[in-house]
Length: 550
Ligand SMILES: [Zn+2]
Image (cartoon, rainbow, N blue to C red; front, side, top):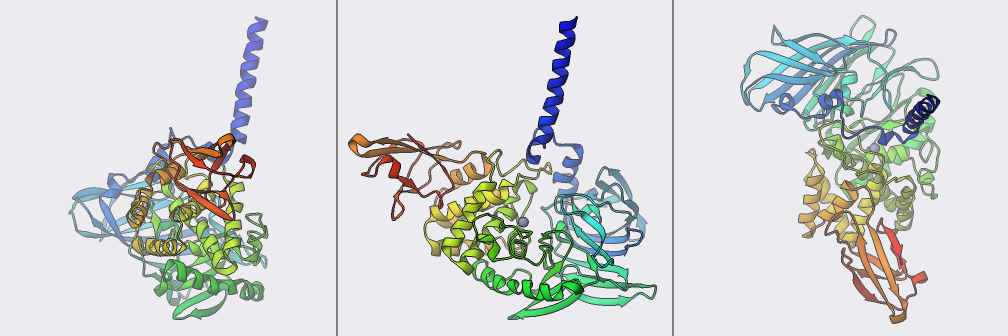
């Protein structure tokens, strides 16, 4: 009896200990890839009621009441049917009210399941027909997620400051839309009514400002390019505005009045950054809409043509040396990283968050491109390798498609280190620059998956880089270069240890002053060398790999 009790106690203790261990595990490992929740399937899957239509435009017309923390209005959604059907899926967080959904004057029936709203039509909508529905909604949206989703705050002077940043959480946290990444509208209107003492700065161009006569003023913004849902943004506050131009690109800046001088000083980094990015990645992709940088109370977000900024008007990331190697404090991380997303994420978009490295790996690598352009190659190499300390290599960068599974942080740091490795594989700076530029052009305004990226690089280089992409993006572990020294006869044997069968990647070895390029595969090969084991180096700054010396 006592023994049984003791064993029960031990079991209870073990269960409790396991629970604590789980709770302490890094955030990324708590999301079990084997069991997506119903909510994740509804959000993540490009199911039949999404795939049967193609978005054309949104016209979001809302009123925001900062006192009540209330939002209400309508989104007019235009879409083309891709097949005959009677139902589509839209999304709106279930704490917000669906007031009515109209097709012309007909009120449509709908069913809500968690964050999804299934809209039913009384008769089949015909393939290729263009439809327009009005989705009326209202309610008290909840502040949630890493960046707040939508937050009703006060600025340090006590004035209202309402901002949205809903990447991950989903745009449907504050407005109704088709909340996924595969399909984007071609253009969008935002009509945002706010108390007249405040200003709304959203995406695109300000095309109108109307005093509504009831203490509210409506700001009309027009976005003339495709846009991700999560990039659609409200920035409602007591903003000061100043502006600049780079050629015929307008650059507009918004900050709190108290920060005007600081902003003028810090935001001066935007222009040379824009010149560097345009040089390497091609023309700023949203030129008609202009470039804006807007102060917000959170760190920042890549909102298209309305990049938001909360990095304390200081270099580094929240005043820290971000990669810890003495380079980060030379520039403002948020201005550079979030603006890089205009090319990587906003122009070229991943169709599913499983492949979000298409945004984050590339934007992080773009920081290195910026560092190289401004401070030279040596700093760039130091900077990118500083990211190694942040990589975990615990799970693959690309996650499961269709289940709303956000990849681990490796998508940023390992993503950038992988691209630096890819550059070394190509081993020709001129060609690498031409490839980056061609990549941005090829997938401009498109929504793509990793397969498209791999295919692009394979075709452009006429090489089979698939095993390299697969090892870095679809496997957790790094490839390891295994070296076996036979000093007696002055040779070293080498091969790759990698999870991907047929993994083959050139690598530079020997002496830093005169690297020797070898072509290891997963089979042993031998190299004659007079370099001793302890002096034999591998170019691990150029290739992000493990090295095993035997
Ligand atoms: Zn980012």
